[in-house]
Amino acid sequence: MLTFLLIVFTSMAALAQSKQITGKVLSPEGTGLPGVSIAVKGSTKATTTGNDGTFSIDAPSNSTLVFTYVGFAEQEVKAGDGPMTVNLSRDIKTLDQLVVIGYGTVKRRDVTGSISSVGAAQIEKVPVTSLQQSLSGYIHPSCVQGSKG
Image (cartoon, rainbow, N blue to C red; front, side, top):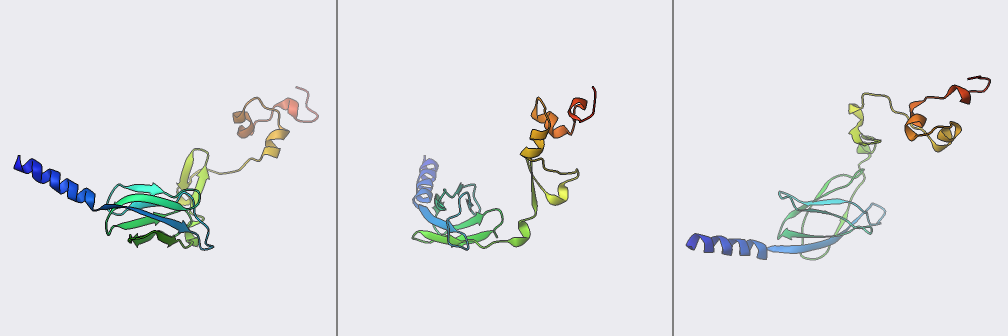
């Protein structure tokens, strides 16, 4: 019973030390950044910023928050008592490191096949019955001028 009470009081003390941390994440131009990932270092607690760059997260007192966003340098900031303002700086070397593909993202060095883009104007030129046909490069013989078949 004594062990149980000790665990309960220890848990309550740990919860009492947790606090609501709020703030805003800004770009170098001073605008709020939406979708910035914010994690409490050393734990699984995380959140993202809203459309205007604001965030709110429950974290232990004196915790360190890690801010990450594509195209910006990762930043670690010690949580303070009042609302935080975090200014992220651009990380130019990471802007060309990701290649977006139809079903996910991969690092440029991991791409082994060829990559091309197809615009709407190109797709409209070829009469097809499905998106797969328009991307496959197949052109029906009746679509070629001067063809009989």
